[in-house]
Length: 457
Image (cartoon, rainbow, N blue to C red; front, side, top):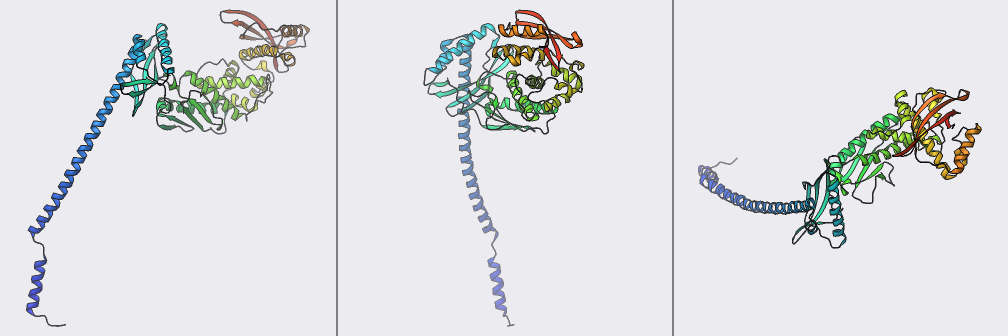
């Protein structure tokens, strides 16, 4: 190592000291940085303020546009309420004459409706969606205390909003709601329908499968469509996809969009499909009793789903006396040509008179089939409805067949069991004949022959 001289060491120390930044220089540098940062913040604040002002102005304009539309709806409903056809017509516009003519009929229908019913045209806007020059509104009306909603469409012209024909392409964004076994796909207008529809169908699937003892619960997909040509029906391409027309294309219940009529239609389809699944798609042959029994099972399920009386007296009595499991057993055992005697194997009896059944709807069906077979000139099947062992009964049957016996609708109102000649069990049926307001009453005997109730008078 070489020897370092004193002057070299002093020079090095002086160099190190002068390389350090003094406090004044540091403060100046930070001041410059702060000013630059402050300028950036100021510029961003200006732009943010401008942007905020623009957004505020756009919202203000949007609110004004929406307010103008609400005022237009108020004026239109007021014209409808007071019967001012001129003012109502001025609110309508279209490129063709069809729309004004249709709206004139609409106006007249409401004037007639107000005469016969308690109609409150509140004009309250339940929902409003504006998309540029077009808009859609759901407007409330109350008829006999029941709230309804109608969906109206508008277009913004130079002179203001005008009521225009329906635009089903403007039905809102596609959305989905789901339960365990049901998925409902819909557009924004039908949001009030979607969840109640999904919940109700889920309950029906669970209840129906509990009664029929399904192997597994099906997964149901529902498509709610804004299509005037659509009815409630199964998709032709997917067995468990139900197509449902939007109720909002017409007057829809605001408190219950899935209304009673829609429920009955959907319940019939679902009950029929569940029964087909359990019975391996068994199709009954008319006029075998299986034809009636399958219809009765469907009607009974519909009654359970919708909680209405479907007059399925035989199935009701089966459930009352032998439990719900008997329904599933009947569905599984029934064949396409089964006679009503199949009920014996379901409940474990040897003869039908031993079972506590209510036969009214079954006998009503037999009388209906009798008239249908006369109309079809189906003598062979017609005679199977009678106890032709007796000459008098056989003669009466031929007389009815040859004269085209048809005195009106027949409904069995009571069926009392008794023992007939030869100790044959029989039912004495009281039958109401004719339409409401013009009916007569008959007594008809049915005798149990070979496990089937046949006509004996």
